[in-house]
Image (cartoon, rainbow, N blue to C red):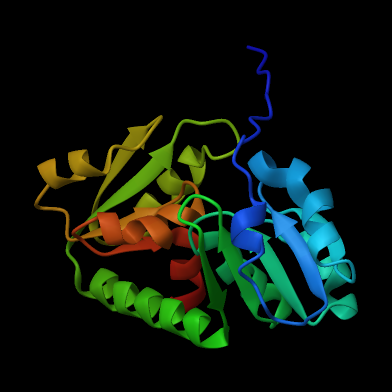
Length: 211
């Protein structure tokens, strides 16, 4: 079956939140696909900035390409998932301008350390768990069923695979026996979305690094 990917552009005006940033830095401008068309206007506010382009949580190559040319990064979008990955790969602060809440926040190495502490906490919960659930997305580009099946064979824990197209976090509450969730889908589930899940959740890639 053929799949057509359509870029959905946000109609939000990003300039009101951008103008709240008073820092005098040479920024690398980054965003997600829905705000990509706004970067030229943002550059007019920060004329010395360098346009990096689009980032994904699992691909921040656009940031790495311009890392040596900038003092810090300016990310336009919501959540901490993308900014944390930028900090992880570049070591530089990320100014996050959220056009939805009109707030600006700086994500730094200390925030990355806090995220890594949460990951290690989830890892300890996994190690002590007897029954785990593996989350597997059916979406193109995220489907790691084979990876999940291989991990199920490797671990000595009682393991169940949960397939979904769009994950309804509230549905996970219907499985109270699951002591820890292992995520093989979008890594954001193990980071930003983990606060929406009552039981510990860890991305499989992070788990394998700690085993």
